[in-house]
Image (tube, rainbow, N blue to C red):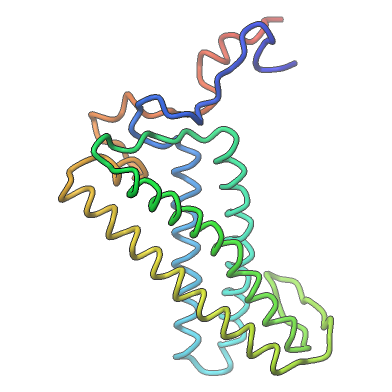
Length: 216
């Protein structure tokens, strides 16, 4: 049994039609990603300040958060190109600004996919077993210090690039909110203002879809 009949095809809400907020799945995945990134940067900075005894546990947490972030980024991309609703840019936003916004978005996706892989590569090239979640990942190669150092430098540099890009997007969102006074910031907030409540798509499968299901 399918949700939609062939005679009445469902229009996916990916094309902007004037509503001012992203769908709730996109918003949820966004804030899950924010939480994971906060945890990764927090655990990385704490590693510089704690003793060796607790460093191993914190490093396990950091690696595990990286794997989850990588998986969530893949889910976000899959959702974005299938059912996600993308609200339109503000009318007063120039084409250049729109291109920059899209470029920064795809840059974030690229870094979220790339950053955990460089961290994993760094762990593997050490030539030692390591913990990931509750599992022990076995040694897969002989330790290579120069290669480990290279991946460490790449991992650290891309982390700063990721942090800088996030900072730029935060500044841009605040600029839209308090200077341009449009609804770019509100479009991704986890709560809804009264003026936008009626415009928010709750799900690609709403009550009308359920009512259209064939009855037994």
